[in-house]
Image 1 (cartoon, rainbow over the protein chains, first blue to last red):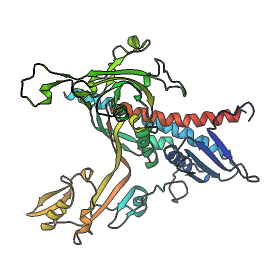
Image 2 (image 1 turned 30 degrees about the horizontal axis):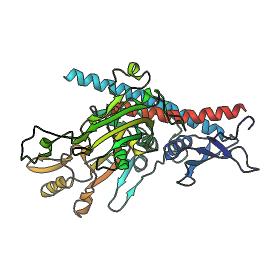
Image 3 (image 1 turned 180 degrees about the vertical axis):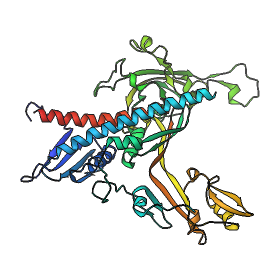
Image 4 (image 1 turned 60 degrees about the vertical axis):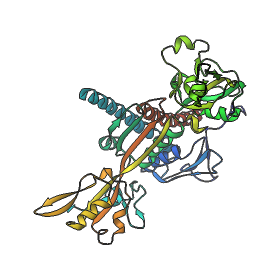
Length: 114
Length: 347
C-alpha cells in the first residue's frame, strides 16, 4: 500500500492463495476476539451467498482472529463481510433504540406507581 | 397435558436438558439447513420478533429480558459489559510518605481496585508515553492522614476506637484535587470513590500516609479494576412441560424436585394434580431426572433465543447506561472495520 509508514499497526489484512478466485479469502482482524468474531460469523452465515464462514483465534496470546469467508457463485468475499458488518450495526442500533425506549417506559411506570 | 411442538421446531428453538446430555445447543437456523424455511437475515423479521422487557431496575442492579436475538450477539454484549466498557480507576500512586504497616505495593494495589465515581465519557484515554497527564485524561486524588493518640481517652480503656484518632483509613478519606479547568467543568460531579466505607489500612499513633493518586481511563481487558460491572450474566428461559398428568403423592414429590414456585398443586375433584405455574423461577437443577418414576413425566428445555440478563454495576454508572454503552462499543467495532474496508478500497 502506498503512503503507509512502517509504524502503522495493521487493523485488517486479507490473505488469499494465488490462483484462488475472489470468493475465498481469509481476513485477519487485529485486536479482536470472540466478541466480534462469533457475532460477525453469525451475521455472515445468515447471508445466502455464503458457502462457508468460520473464525479461529490463532493463539491465545495474540489478539487477532482469522476470519474465513467462501462464497457461492462469483461474489467477491469482501462483499458478504461488508454486508455482515453493516447488518450487525443495524441490529445493534435497533437493540439500542428498543432498550432505551423500554427503560424509559419502565421508569415512567415506576413513577406512576409511586 | 401440554401440546408437543413439531420435531423441527423443537430442534430450531429449544435446548433440551437430558439426564446425561444437553441436546440442540448450537444455532442451526442458517439459510439452506432447513428446506421450506427462509432463514436469510431480514432486519424487518428481526424487528418484528425482537423485544426487551425490563423486569427490575434500581441504581445498582438491573434484570431484563432480551427475546428474539441469537446467543452470539447476547454473549458479545455480556463480554463487552465485563471487559470493554471504559471506566476511570487509580493507575499511578505517588507515595510521599507511608509509615504504616501495609507495604507500598499492597496499598497501591488496594487503591487501584476502588471504584471511582467519575463519568468516563467526559475523559479521554491517556496518550501512550505521557507521564504527566493533562486535565482531560487524568483525575488527581489525595490521601493524607495521620494517626494520633486520643488524649481524652479514659485511663484503662482498651478499645482502639477510643484510644486513637484516625486509626482506620477509609476510602472516604480520599479527596479530589482538581487540576487545570476541572474545578469549573466538573464542579457538580462530586468526584471521589463510589463507596466511602472501604477500609484501606489501619494505623497506630505516629504512622501516617501521604499519597497522591492519578486516575486514568481504561478497559477491563487491560486490568480488572477498570471493569464497570460487579458482574454481568445471562441465562436462558427454562421451559418445563408435563407430558403426563401427575397426581397424588407423586405430585408432591414433583413439586419438591423444582425450585419453590415453579410447580403448584391444584385440587381437581378431590385429587391433587401438579401444574407448571412459573418455569422462569427454576434453576434447572434437573433433580427430577434422578427419580425413575418422575423423569418420563417431565420435559426440561430452555428457549434458545430468550435471554434473562442480570447486570450489577459497581456504582460508577447506572446499569442501563452500561448496557447502552456496551451496545455502542459493538457498533464502534463494526464501524472501525467498515471504515478500514472503505479506506483500503480507495487506495
